[in-house]
Length: 428
Ligand SMILES: Nc1nc2c(ncn2[C@@H]2O[C@H](COP(=O)(O)OP(=O)(O)OP(=O)(O)O)[C@@H](O)[C@H]2O)c(=O)[nH]1
Image 1: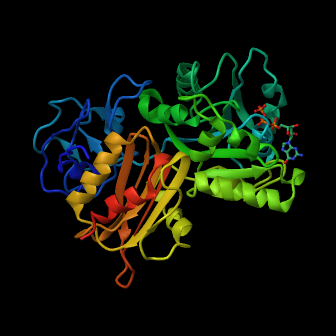
Image 2 (image 1 turned 120 degrees about the horizontal axis):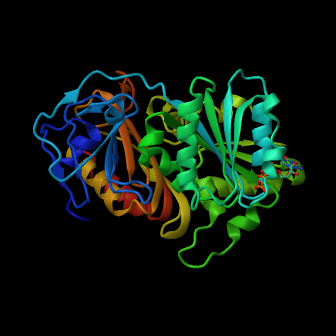
């Protein structure tokens, strides 16, 4: 394990005693946000898409060295970023940013069908749609239920794939939507191409000021074609090339196993088992023609710590003793969950999480956790997407409530035993 300053503790848990700037083996320093009961988000490295490494204040809740609302949510950390007791603000604006949902899924899995279901359903939301099609000809756009059906705006992105060539266009489009049409829509839905890797799209929501300040990522919805998914999941890719079908499942907050009318029950069950091995964190529903309740896909708060409690439900099926799941040394994408009763030593937990964030952020696609930290009366909830980390104290632990820690990792090359050992070494 690399040496990580335990001062990073403050950045994760907002609890440690010191307020000093922390120099890590990062391109940026991470500001110690001491003794705050407010959410903290950290981007440990710069993004390919972002101009600078950034430390991000939680959505609308932590303001640091702020001159504008933009800075209230994010500021760039530089090596000499902060002094003791820098001008931390305690006044926290409400998070009134526009929610955005990413609909992804392999080619033909039913994304446009789901989008039409959303647009034609009676939910009272005014939706702006960004439709990304790989190719010059706009076919999906014409398949999307007309504006009359409820979309405030349908914008096509036809000249490439959102996750690579046209990411800048996405930023521009969202910015334009916000600047010209704010107030005319309540939600943005982005349909990716079937070959998109969701990670860079997710990161765009954090790395780009223009988006981050006005729009929040609500959730990633992944359609899985019950008939063909197995084939795509099996597909061997050349070294260094991602299997998009796997990635799309790995990043999902909500999974829809679609087209179940085309296969038998045993095929659906084994596919679901496979999906759960990749991502045990997401909710999953079966569907025909994308017909799911709309609150399953809109307003899910998958990236909102305040609505993160559903995560405990997700793990409640686990017993309260310590155990980690899944495949040891699996080079593919899998999930590992750890459920373990006990209190964590703050500094040790920070060292461990900090090291994972720094060293393993390429491999760890998503992580979510609910922790019991020694001396902290509240539960601490966190989640991360690669090198982005958000964490905040949540409600108080109940007097009789067992203090059970729950963590899920989703990513590549996850070693369940090693992760569990690392976690346990942080317990008091
Ligand atoms: N049998 C069956 N067909 C479906 C279902 N859902 C969608 N389809 C059909 O599958 C085809 C592809 O659906 P789309 O919604 O266009 O899929 P997509 O993911 O948007 O496709 P791409 O944009 O090419 O990636 C269409 O002909 C749909 O009518 C389903 O549940 N069952």
